[in-house]
Length: 371
Image 1 (cartoon, helix red, strand yellow):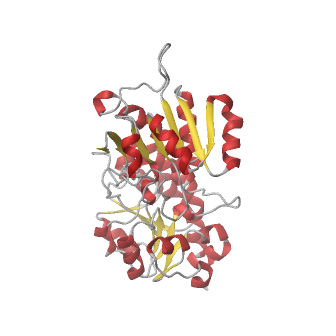
Image 2 (cartoon, rainbow, N blue to C red; image 1 turned 60 degrees about the vertical axis):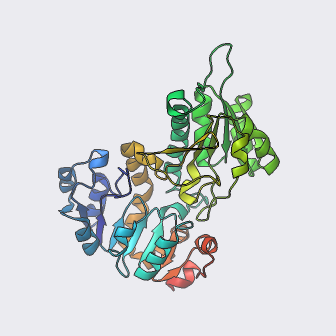
Image 3 (cartoon, one colour; image 1 turned 90 degrees about the vertical axis):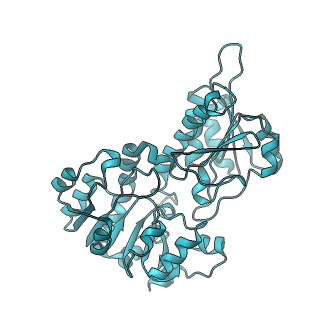
């Protein structure tokens, strides 16, 4: 199969879909790999490294799109790329379709085969291609939250750890999955007081077993959220409904009740955000203030640590990519039911229920679409 990767064009996105090692793995499996010139520069990979791995460098993205049977990316295609997507071409990347009607319409129109990293499941029912980015985003949420709590950045002027005689910062983490548990890990390590909220008692029990009295766990109810937000210095929105729009747990009415200069980091922004106030921001202008609360809503947080995240993502996605390249998309999807969960759009039809429900559209079960 002809495999291609292009330079990401989303604002301040520095990751790349294939590392030189991944390109070499495809090449060694008998496939041809095309890489856009300069695609890996944002995470420190040179064209020469790709050539050494056996890839062919092409001058422009349009050339890669035109040659490749499967495009391996990091982020969803943007409007300027829609016209480059071909019928029957495999698009293998993060899509986050639920809140993005223009992209849905473009993928349907193209009649491509769109496989989303974020809905692929493994044998345990977990999300293996989303997990590494969730772990990175959760860790970064505390790092950037700490920064924007500093007074020069618009925050309250609060140190997460406090000092003797001064209270520790109060951090509320909404969601105890991969993002939330990673945020809790860093927050506890930095000495903050942490409350984590979820509707999954097993996850809350798991975190309490690890951290004991270092954290407080609460079942997620509107009343508990109403009580917690006014006390919080930093809130991390870490909720996820795979493939669907994130639930709005933080309402506009909450913001005036919160401390002036407190910070919300809405990691769920890729799926529309878990705060009503959220709208997507970018690394060059990452925050906005509403009702005195600093809101950080960057949709590609892991792009800030591009080397780490590119390699972590490659570790998670390469095996599935090699399977698709070896068997072809239909056979690979039938072979691995978890990979089939990743099929969001197939030749003009939506094949993931959560995406369809978010936009009020009809859908076809993935197994029916490919048979």
